[in-house]
Image (cartoon, rainbow, N blue to C red; front, side, top):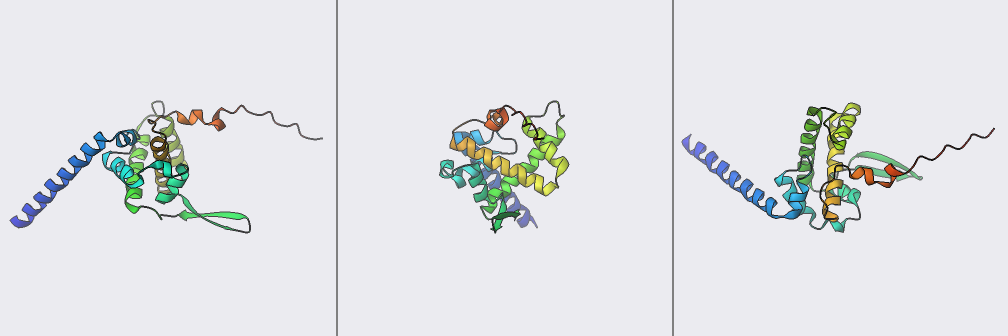
Length: 182
């Protein structure tokens, strides 16, 4: 029995050493530091994203990176009609798992904060959680995080929780409705 306890102790020490090494690496790499600005992205996930994705500019946009990770619905089209299926789960299993675990953390934080103190993303998460099943919410959050990570890494930008306000669709003035024909 003592042999097994000793073995488990050695394994715990080795895991702690690996965790320390990953944390040092994540603090030293500017891309990892930038990625950790997102809620739910810690040193392990940030290091895995940087190591797996490499240069995010290789993807045309965040949706392509998200699709590469398997966080978007599969598409089938016939006769000009596109039908969305289940989440494809085709990409990197390890990184997708880390992003989904981070999304669970983001969901818990969004539900714990009061609406008055919530960020725009947390309000979006709360709204999503009120309308959809848990699994779909978590995958949607992971998908959003993957897209945000792409934007941050491809453009060398820090996380901006109010970036959505800069989107042209948000700022576009409302068009006046056409008067109905009589």
